[in-house]
Length: 508
Image 1 (cartoon, one colour):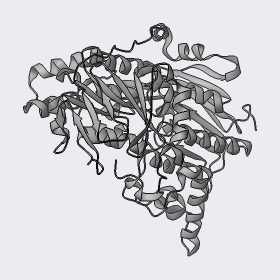
Image 2: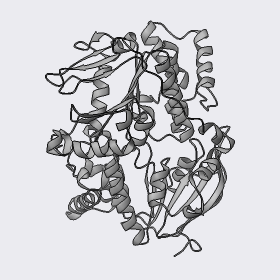
Image 3: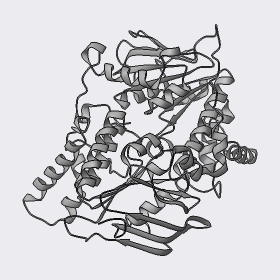
Image 4: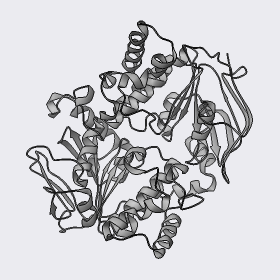
């Protein structure tokens, strides 16, 4: 089967949510045995299109044909969502093999078949996916939950696989292993639709690309050998691509000022000085997240390690005290740690002010919220709307914008650009730079070494709770960061082996 007789053919698909037209005549054709990149800025309609193809949403108009036979054992389409759709109170097995356990009939062999399918799907994703099938899913760190989400899609044995930002929470080795799996699937005739904002990954694994902008198809099935990155980017954001040519400068760190954050009693102390952006990275994302959450007051410190944040001891620390001292925390896991579905955008933007100043929202605060929407270029129809109605990039900008009125001095950034497009990233970079230029600083964990090398004054590599390497100046590059990460996984670097299963990290 080729693109002439495709696995998926979408023509003129439209979808509106209230007054917002998410899709406006979209076309998409996916052939068997290909990885098809679906590109576009946040809010372009990518996730909505995938949800309709997967049957999660219904289209208002248009044609959709999937040339795969449905069966009791294998649904025709499987989707891996950008925001994790796992049930945290269920086991890993129950999340991966839901179809087998609930839909594939009864019998003594049902759970045995389910265990075999789940185990095989996880095993295909490499050593990092050696996860206890009986572990409670919500107790796993974010990268392991992402692997479980991917394994669930693989275990269904579908002929059309939809992947919405599958590598957003994965480190480089994990992403490479996933690409190896995808190549094996396409060799057997499976069609894959891959959404990603990482052009390097697209180039590595995809064959053709379709680009959406403002709910319309603007590039249709272009071979990636026939188009360069700048042309792809221009098709995604139009004339705004010129703004991306202007690099966002790093702020100059202050000299002689007391540190904003200092990790004490460690083999290699870590500190953030005023005017400085300091990166942290680890092959175990939970180690970097735990460091940020300890600074935020939401995690206890390991034995023998203490920290001072904004001149205060963290012995009796809490998020409320951190906020009132001048710290702000931004998580890349919006669904779990950032966005509260029962609150409006207005309440998200003004929530920290209510905590810091111990007062309710007043009429002047609404004007402040509107200013923040304009300042951070947040696309929304109504301040009363829930953040879930916004694209991922706009949700992330809401989480950044809420700290601006408080004049925070220290930003704690937990993979803050996860799943956002290049345009939103530039807005986020600018927001961080403005804090640093005003004498504040940031501690920044990112799953993207290229981003850390471009944005940080120095980068610390972690193995567990310990710093194993520090890179700065001419030593700070993407290649050096990757080399230091690989070295941190060896005994010579002092790293302790990571146990599999629920012992690995705690609830995030």
